[in-house]
Each structure stands twice: as C-alpha cells, then as structure tokens.
Length: 520
Image 1: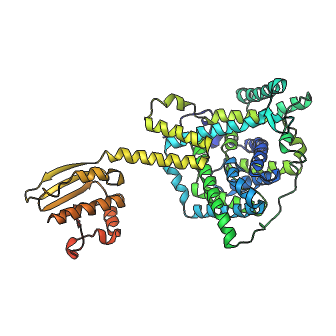
Image 2: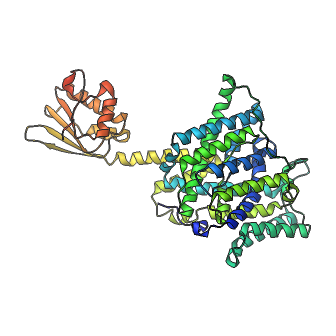
Image 3: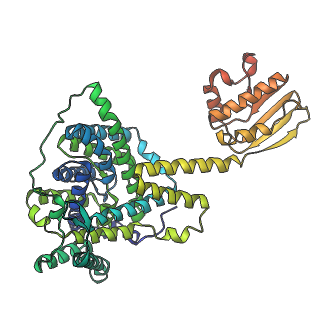
C-alpha cells in the first residue's frame, strides 16, 4: 500500500529532470541547511563549524555513494541529541572517534544486507513516522520566535517584532505556494528566500537573521575541512565508552535514512537501494569523523525541499553540499544576513507537505489497532526520538498481529478406520496460540495412536516445539504414541535443530519423545 497522496507526491518522474533544476534545487537546499546545521551543532555542544562541516561532508558523500538519488543528508537533531552526553562528559575528540566507528558499523550493516529489513516496517508506523517528524520540524521552528531577554535568557517575541516576523513568514509561504502556478523557471523556495531577504535588507527591517543564532563572536566563515585524526587512545576502556554511543548513532542514522528513502520512493514512484544507502551513510560518517565533523544522516525536511524544487539525481545533493562549502569559504557574511523568518517559512511549507493530512480522514476507516499504532509512533517521535518510535511501533504491531492470529488456529478432529485419531491443525503454531493448542487434545481418552496433521499448518518457533514435546510426554505417560504428519521442509528442519527434544523417528531411540512421520 502506498502512502496516501500529499502535495509533494504529485511530482513528475525523470522526464522532468534537468541540470538547471538540480543545481537550483541544490542551492535552495544549501540555504535551508545552514540554520539546521548550526542549531544541531549547538544542541550537541560543539562549535557551529563542526555542524556545517558535517552537513557538507555527509551531504556530499551520501549523495555520491548512497542508494537514493535526490535524498539530502546532513547533521540532524536525532543524532545530535544522542551526542550531548558524550561531548559533555568526554569532549569533542571522543565525538569524532565515535562518528568514525558509527560509520564503520553502518557500512557493516550494508555489507550484511540488513537494509532490506526496513521493509518490515508496517504502513501505520510509516504514517506515524511522517506525521511525528512533521510535528518535530514544526516545533523546532518555534525557537526562532524567541529573542534574548534582559537577563540573558530567551523569551517570546511580542508586539511589532512578532508581527513583522509573522508577516515575513506569511510572505515566504505565499510565494512558495503561488509562484509555481505562474512560472517554474526557478524553485519557489529559492525565489522566496531571495525576494524576502532583499526586502528585509533593502528596507533595513529589524528582525532576527542567521547571524543572530550563531552567538556572540561566532561566525560561519571557515576554511576547507582538514584531516584530523581523533585524539583518543584506542584502549579497551575508551572503546567501552565509545561503542554504546556508536551503536545508538548508527541505528538512529540508518532508521531515519531508510525511512526517508522509503518516503521518497513513494513520492517519486522509484525505488532506492537500502543496502547501498547503509554503505553510503557509513562512508559519509567515517570520513566526517576524520575531518572534524559531527556526523549525520538523511534529512526529511531538506529532502522534501529538494524533491519539491525539482531535484531528482545525485547532482542536486552534490550541488547542495558544494554550495554549502562555498558559503563557508566565501559568502558567510551574506548568508548570515538572511532573515530567520524566511527559513522558518520554508520549513513551515515542508511541514505542510510532509504531514499526512488524510490520516485524519482515514482514522475512522482503518482498524482501531492501526490508528493506535499511528498515533503512538507520532507521539513517541515527538516526545522521545525517531528510532525509539519506529522500534516501539514495530514491536506493538507485531504483538497485535500475534494476538490476532493466536485466535485463528483451530483443529478438526476425526477417527480413521484403523482406530487412529487425527487432529488436523489449521493455522500457524507459535507462541501466541500455545494455550489454545493444548486445549484441543485429550491424552487420557484418546486411542493408542494419535496423529497431528500439519498439512494446513506449520511449526513457527521454539514455543511451538516445546508445546509439541510436552504434549508427547503426556501421551507417552498415558501409554500412547503421538505422530506428526505432513510437516513442511522448513518445519522438519526446525524440529531437527531442536536436538534431542524432537527427532525424525521415535524408534531410533526410546528416550526421544515425538515421532515425526514424514509421509508423502
């Protein structure tokens, strides 16, 4: 099932691709990357340039080596939150070492072809991911509505500054919405950024700019990233500090990247390569850690901007990274003049395009369990993080599935001419239905030979094997024999792996409990 249509989903395929669209889309994305990279660096407790370098390196290398053309990667909040404690307790050098190890783990995941498991994420979890992330992007923009107060803290804007800020946001959103109806020569987001910024600069309007969010004495200006081997002794003690953070960062990064890839697949009616994306993200992070960056992963907001602006190929991601580097090297003072209201307006349009508004309409039409999972994943994404939300959503979905299918198993009992009683099992035998399975049988009153017919069933897990074994013990104590018939090949293999608990033929060893009659 595909994600229901959203504004960004009505996007043409490769026939709408052009070099101009790719480059202009990359420029738009680069402008939107600046405040995000700076903000996430501040969250992680590192200098703004560490976040900007990460956005450049991760964005460039993931675009070159990743498995999803058109997807944008960079420093992200989901990973920055994990880094806070590491930087505070051990310093930035430990962060760089952790990012290198994170990349190695992600590359290993790609080599082991673990990216395919993103397909097990249920559709309600995907919808919850989309909605939750849209809410997170929206809430992140609210910080820009605050200014420094007299006591040095931050307080909400009021009066004229608030009205001006809201007016600039509204103007940006209007341009983005209506310009494509007039012309598509340039991406509407880029046009909005340029036009509204020129108005603010031309009329010398007093409003927050990118410079204001950098902090006292800080600047975007920097040189080309240089090789910097993390100054950390690779001892077992330090490895035990780094490894848990690296595993968490690798998991968070891959989950966010692969789910974003899946969303873009749906939007563009194409298919990315999950395992290649794992390797691409791994290369990006390992190199980033060796060049003084904080690492990152795919960014759904900037990816949406790119797709909406016409970016389809790797060139758009490469262009975005190179433009960002150019800003750092040559144009920092001009980028610092961009009003924050403009970038907030762009991100608000991303929120509108990302949130699945049809979920309100379908909420009463889908099963209650799916609606519950959708809301749960959205809530956990907002109040905890994306990785935890997806894990929780998948686990809850699996438990609901198990509970429902536990009620689907049933048995048809019949007696054959030779006096053998046959229990024909229908439905999978697994942990969720073991209690019901046990209640079907009557060892005390059954005849000497009992057959469980598995033509329409299969043994799924260890709980099922244990239940069969316990049942065989009861029949043996009653002086009777239990046979298993018409097991599928995978079920027979599962029983053989159980060792001395279940065997192929009871006659081979009287200590064995269950006879498995492999009849044609």
